[in-house]
Length: 335
Image (cartoon, rainbow, N blue to C red):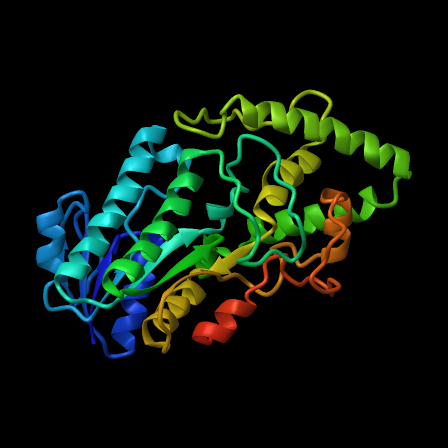
């Protein structure tokens, strides 16, 4: 099988390329930047906004893995993020349609539902979340990911292109998972939460109310959008650092993460599985990123959630990957 990989110079793209080559596939690579990896694959510099250029690369391929995008709101103004992410995706699908390619795998994001970069609050309607969860995007990056999923659905209706949009969480390189710094951060956060739950309920509620108000004020001021100010995410006066980090970032990302090698595995499974239609799939580690009791996390940070698809057990992820398991046979290996 010959596969074109866009965005091949990114963290995920490089690992996907290596993985598919190891599987014995014929791959073509493209990115807007010069190639930095030693590879036997054909590499072409190409801007996905150039339709004819991307079409020429799709010609002769059996499938496309579309990873090229501006990957978070820090990478440019909202209009650029939306334009490049959506129009670039349209170009890739349109090129596939014109060249008779009937399988596309694209990188969406957990943020397609509206969570990590939201201007306002994010409270799940139920836990663990799954693909049926309502969408409420309020930032340009997340909105762009919502739209690229719609583009996949459009091309199934229009040209019978079967596609998978992988709703990726925070992706980490394998060598960064258990560094001393990463282990220290997890240990410190677990110890902090252990002590936090021992505080009187009235104190817990008061602290949570304070951090929530400060967090929402920070987000509503669009401080998580371009141009991002380094150092601007320090906790406001009176807010404990670890509580701020847990609420401001971990909570809005549902403590979801995935080893980049498992992201590559999800791409492979999406290319080889037998299915029709356009599907958006959550793929995530089966454990939360802290390795902490999930029921405790939900009770502390999502006290208004009363609906649970099943009782939370141990450190299980707050993101349900059952649909990916059923449709493409995805099972994370690096947990």
